[in-house]
Structures are given as C-alpha cells and as structure tokens.
Image (cartoon, rainbow, N blue to C red):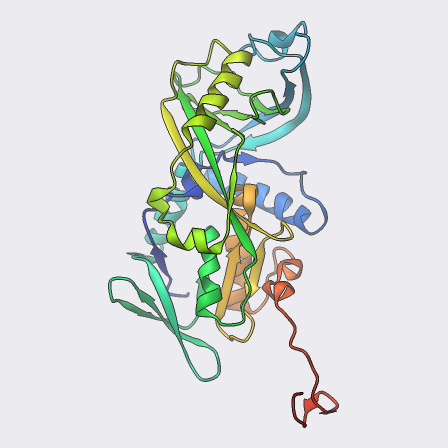
Length: 355
C-alpha cells in the first residue's frame, strides 16, 4: 500500500472538521452532488461501526418557524419546543448525525494505526520539476517533505494553491460563521434536528441535539464571505465567534425552547466553510501537473461528503480514476481560464507568432 503523510497546520479537527454541525442527509443532493450524498451516507454508517463512533445515530428532521401566531401542539411533535413556535412539520424522517470532532479524530487514529504519519506544520510552498510535477512541499519550520503524489485538502486555505501553481484558479471564499453549544445531561434531549425559517433576529437556526447531551446551534446569521487575501492572513486558531451573532442566536433559541436555553452558551465558536463560485466542490488533478490534486469547496456538506471524498481521491491517486462516484463534474479545470489561440495554427499545433 501507499505510505501516507498527513500535514496538519494546527490540530486535528481544529477548524470546520471539528466545529461543524455533523448533519447527514442521504437524499438531499441534486444533479452531480446526488451521488456524493448517497454514497457518503452509507460510508458514514459503515465507518460508525468499524471505528466505533458513538455519536452516529439516525434522527428525524423538522422544519420549524417562529414568526407569527403561536401554534398549538408543537410540544406534541418535539417535547423541548416549549416556547413560541408558529409552525412545525416533518422535513425528513430518515436523516442522521455524527459529532465531527469524534469522527475526524477516529479517522485520523485509524489512518495512523494503518501506517499513516501525522506531521504538524504549515505548508508554505511547493517545489516543481521542469515538467510541472511536484517534487516536494515546504513547511514553515524549514522541513521539506518529498513525495510521489500530493493532495491539497486545506479547506478555505486551499486558495493558497493559486500562488503555488501559477495559472491555477481556486475561486473560493471562506464563509465565516459562528455557532454555539449548550451542554445537557447525556441522552436528556429528545433527538430531533431542526431547520428553522429566518426570524426577526436575523437568524436561520439549525439545531442538532447530540447523543452526549450537547445541543449544537448554528445558522446565527451575519456570516462573512472572506476573499483569498483575508483567508491567507488568518490562522485557523484566530477564527473566533461574533458576540453579536451569538447573542442573536441565543435570543432566537430561547424563544422557541426556554427549557434548553441558558443564560450563556457553554461553547462559543466559529469556523470557515470553503465555498466555490458555483457552489460545487473541487475534486481532481491540478491542471499542468501530473501528481498534484485538490479536494476542497464542500461548503456546508464537508462532514457528510468527507468519507466519499477521501475514497474518491484515493482511487484517483492510486488507480487513476474514481470508481465510487463520478467526480468529473467537480474537476478543478472547470474554473481555469482558457488561453487565447491567436497564433497561426497547423491543426492543434501553434506555428506562428502569438499576436
């Protein structure tokens, strides 16, 4: 098998891979992303058993609204919806969840148990051969990692590849959003995920009670879209919550569920989601290289699509083609600017001056 080295800039599950909601939905894909949803949902089920992931479970998802006249019977659908709820209906009875920090660390441990090496460090550039292939990756501490194949999966920080691979475009923003966690006794919160309509506090809450008792709340509103120049300046450890959006989310959540709300959250945090210009991930070989690949741009589906992305990229690197899903719609080359062909040509060969 391949000898794998994982370079981690800060800490395993330190960014969105540890701070996301962990919501899993099988049938929510559309077009090219349908297979990502379906295949990766099944992979999550298998990984939960294989890696003994305690936080994986099935739970139904409700659509909730809080604006307008209070409805009757909300608590009959979900016991902890004991505040002002104007609408509550089943959205999908067959969704699931996993706690991101657990599954991410479990997968890293499994990789190490199977021979992978974890190196802590910040990648600062690459060294390329005359044919464009990558020879090595340089780290901030002076280390140089030599390899045969290189996969860049740095979330929003993958925009740095534009500098390392001249002409390569990574049209992506980092969606900077806050989230909170309210801790309750294990198993004390009835398992329902909520997708809430936008409210008067500027929130569009998503609520995920977890098996361990944590109630995760995101959709706090006010997300910022950071361009490349701002992403590059930001260390993952510096991505912190917006107090105003946390306060707004607490107000919204307290309104619908006073029994679960607290004076202050137990955890206040933030992360950045990588989102491309067309909203689809980038998965495939970097143009003009024979051995460099990218996998990023998963936006709010990073946890769900993580397993299938890892499998697809492993198949692409080792076998030359992804077999588990068709990743051609996510080819990074779709964003590349095609060179103008103004010179005289003989068939496909340019033979004259490029005017």
